[in-house]
Image (cartoon, helix red, strand yellow):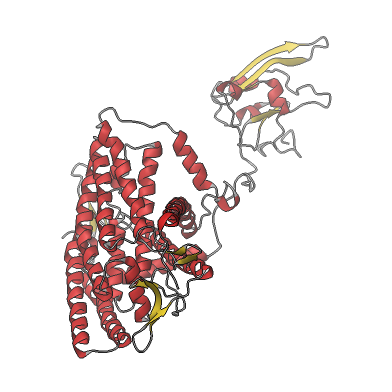
Length: 166
Length: 431
């Protein structure tokens, strides 16, 4: 296999003057030194705009009375490819199913968003958020209360104006 | 009538000067590291450290504190005594060289006139040359004692590079000594004041040679062979951590500061500002400003404002050369090792030698003819200017960088052979 390449044009050695080239380079660096343009993003003050379809840590939607929307159907732990969701379902007096235990191990999660896609009642969502730092490892297993407290926007994988994806 | 300070006030004034200058040097070194990081950031269209304090001004203090409380790692196989000795040997000469650099016009006090120099030793320049070359011992001993092959290579390169460029450095200073007729830095400044213009003009090529060899002597890019991050990790200080690493760092920047102060002093008049109002020199026990037409000395009138203003002038000149160091570092890529040696021995040394010959011949002829000092300087300026133009525009063509640039242009095809043979044949890249 012969590959044709373009050879970088270099002037003959007798025509190269190192010092003059160095001065030319210094003029370029001086121009950049004095120009106010920077590419730096001042992070905590300036936030990156995340894509509407960014998939970050989860949040659980809640009813107006504060109960989780989850009906403990068991679809999300079944579909989860990383097997990071632990769900123990229960049933109250009226026969409504609800989660007794709902935990997501965010370390095992691969943020595929399939839990959100599979959820029949639009309860679990992946969110547009990436600031997840914690001081201990066990803080990364999000329990039900933690998931319900999360208030960052959800990804547009799920369209709020069309909740049932019709 | 100006009398020099003596007795107990002299002792006190000297102690005070040492304390203040030590503080100023350490502070300048600390803030040069910040300037390095900020300027490099600006050159690369970044912002650099701007979080600690306003504009990041407290960053050096944060760095220093961090290095003080960090764990000191002592490699198990290192030679402990020499491993400890290395950073000290690097740092002390770097700091003491500043003692002979005059930094302002003499200051009048009720007890007498105080020279704004820590030690006006008669061997000034020789003392600086001797001590600054001692700095390489810290690098060599530190690199060797680390018992690490990269550190050892860095140390070897440091010593070879220092020896090579010491020659050109010394030769480029000979022209200054010939012009000034003395090696004390106070007298070199005085001669520049008397000449009417700074030595950078009559000795322009000497200045260029001095700058280049000073860059090599202080191990700064494009000559940072002893460190060479991309090849040797960080060279001689690979095994050093925390404050011992910091001491090497301080030593490097203190060397830079001394070299910048020397560039300002030897070639840009030191603390001298344009005009003869600030001139001052101890001539036969009297502080004089110059000589009148009959050759009688004119007494100088030192004043506090003159001292402050000249110190500001010195600071600006030194600061400019410090920025030049940083500026060049973030512009030029590193030389290859053989290129450094070629530049040192095949270009710098012969050029410096030839230049010494030219300048000494010119001075001899001018002394024989007997022209005024000003004409003397003017003729030298013209001759040096011709030498500089020849050096910058013609002599360095194709001689400084070899390798890739030496390849003639040939249209070439690169033939990628199957992986089993695994060779890339480049017609144009051969030779």
